[in-house]
Length: 197
Image 1 (cartoon, rainbow, N blue to C red):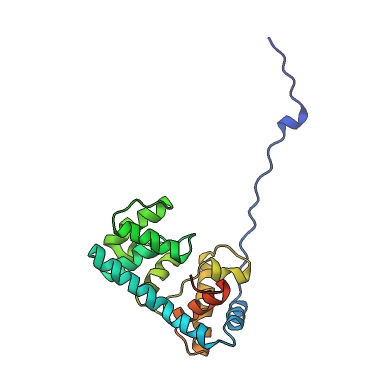
Image 2: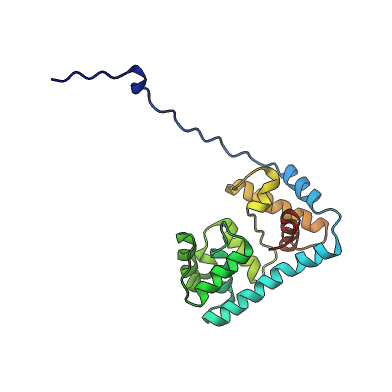
């Protein structure tokens, strides 16, 4: 019989990965942060913000016509391809899908786009993608909270609690500056990214 020697360190269990809980953003912090980001709005910034979703809706109408599906479904197709990509890439993927080309993207994005052709908003379970589809289709009261909207808080993703807090903050500040929630959110996008993409 062979006698094996195991050094003492070989019996130590690997350290358990510790995931720190996601910090909770207070409503006051959310409102003040977005309020600061919406100050001193230039004419060009306001125009860019107010036309962003109108332009996106035009794309949705074109895809609706191309695929012979309702506007809601076309907007949902576009939104399905939005995770982790810039807007220009988002539209490239949506058009590839709409015209039957090969689409190289996240598997879940393509799956959701396929479901969206018949299910519309109901195909999108994510709070961000669902709100984004509604915004694109013309609902300017829905609020899209993506990575750019989280950046001022040092976060890369939002749980349901933080998402609702930030969406409510956008609605609060939007009332203060006499804008729709979607237009204010587009304005903050423009400011954080330098220019709408």
